Structures are given as structure tokens and as C-alpha cells.
Image (cartoon, rainbow, N blue to C red; front, side, top):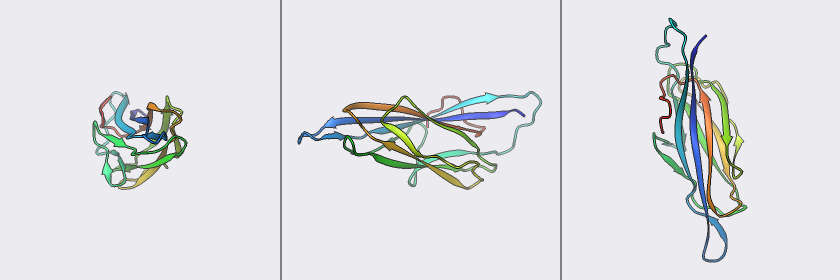
Length: 156
């Protein structure tokens, strides 16, 4: 059975600076969110009406297309955990088939989302930022899912 498989990509940034009192600190590490869509088509198969609809947010704030998330201030060696929610705003089950973090030693998952997500329900995952040195830090998070109407490479 064919269908659409989508990747919801989250790019993480963190900047670590030296403060005036010679304490290593982190100022405004940011997250940029990107949706990536990988499609598989079967000719003649009817499309599903409605379907699942992924929405990622932090606290009560949706992370919109092209948006970012500010981790705030932290210090080298003192980890900071941020919880993100994945909501299903659609009318069919949302399946998260993979949550992957690449290109980073300073960002990590401390919890994973549950799947499937019923219509109107949500799950969460936690990302830890634990800077080891000063300077720009970055990583990418990919959330592979079955939301059928996201465009390839759409920034959210």
C-alpha cells in the first residue's frame, strides 16, 4: 500500500560565549524547524480524505514555517532540557516512524515521542543542549511521519 512518508526536520543552533566574569556561557542557542516530505505514489490508489496533520510546538507556542526556537542562556557543562510537543491536528492517526538527531555532540534526545498519535492528541520529546565549548553549535532533527500535505523542504 503506497502512501506519503514525511520528514519533519528541526535544525538546532547554540552559541556559547565567554561572559565578563570569565565563566563560559551560552547565549541564545536557536532551533530552526524545517519540514521535509518524501513521497511514494501508487497509481490508481485513492487519496485519503483529511488525514493526519503534524504540528510541532514548545509550551503553547506553535513553531511556524521558517520559525526558530531560542534555548535562552546556559553555561558550559550545565545541560538545558527543552520539551517539544507533536500534535495531530488532523482526522486520521499520525504515525511517527523515526526521530533522528544528526551532526551534533551537544544536542541529544532525553525522551522520544509515542506513536501513533490519535486525531486531536499529542505526544512529546525532549532535546538536551549541553555545550562543551564556545561558538556556534548546530544539529538536525528529522521526524519521519505520515502527514500527507507537507511540501518537500517547507520551512516551519
